[in-house]
Length: 287
Image (cartoon, rainbow, N blue to C red; front, side, top):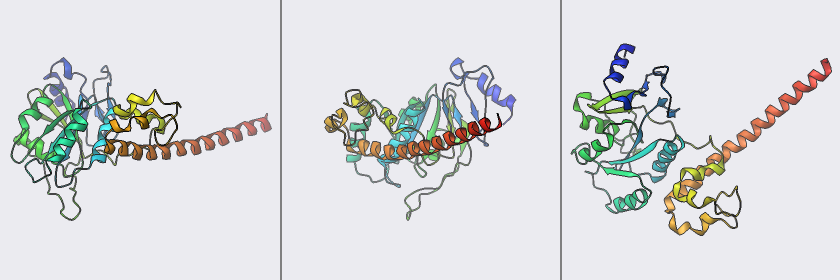
């Protein structure tokens, strides 16, 4: 993909798309120097997208709510709007799951769409969510991301692969970041996947900000550093009946991962402090 083609692609779009950054296979991006970088996801390296389309399979592989919450929280961390797409609605799946999905995520204000790439169900609704935007796809392998893109634009002909019956997960068929034109006014960034998402890069006290239904009560807690686990005077625990249990369990899992980061920072901080002290001591000797 040449710079000339990139510039042509950008110029073909309206002003809204002038800030587009094109991802390359080597994870670097190209953009006009004067364009401000508004959003950035580090892994995979993609910038200035309008929204993250989180694709989950309703079946094959089984829907994993914690994994879904990971992707949602990651999008929120980067300040990018998440849109939830539940694919493979043509398979036999528990219809009560749809009620659970809607009761949790629609009530939190997320846009939700149910699709079947093989039977082309829900594609018009899905396409409306993409209109006029630069979207990036994410989701577990085997969820049908490439199949969805092919259903929207068969000319793209992306590679797909079946889900392993034994492992109940797919294998990544997308090998590099690639920008795709879905139609005249919609662009999609297909990626090799968002590396194993773990929240071992933020402090435990900040995890609740990634869950709006938990963050709603955080300011009313007795202690400013409350982690909403077993503390006295915790407003979140007092309102736990208003929070879906799967969301709260995901929150607890992410807090544990964030604690690893806190310990690492403390350890590295001690190392840095020790190094500085040694340097200062040596300076005193040589002065």
